[in-house]
Amino acid sequence: MKFYVWVLRSYGVSFAGEPRYISNGARFDDFSLVTIGERSVISRDVVLLTHDYSITTALIANGTMPATDVAVRRPISIGNNVFVGMNSVLLPGTTIGDNVIVGAGSVLRGTIESDSIMVGNPAVKIGSLTDKPERWIERSQGKFAQFDPA
Image (cartoon, rainbow, N blue to C red; front, side, top):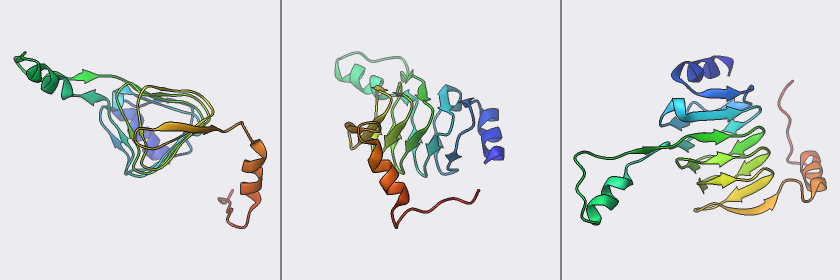
């Protein structure tokens, strides 16, 4: 993991601490526009999309023909202790607070408040990590729980 973080950092990704896991199958659009927090997880096939070329399409549809394609580039910021599930898409300008779970296949944009559980396309908040803390303790002790080696 440390080597992959070094590689991502050399491409321009900013880190606010040591991530827990970043899949080498995650797709970064513009490395230099991405910040990842401490203990965060970026699962396989997550897309971090920092550009939007749809502006050109909208301009043409409204009678303005730009001399060239127009891109809007916006940063993505992922807070501390965030889990982003497989096949999720983070759109340009997405800012995720701390302690957030993003369910697999979710499409996020805008500002996601800390302690949120987000799922869907478009992603919606279905709960808070701090609403019922006992449920997380129960799940961590259930028969399906397994622990990574120390």
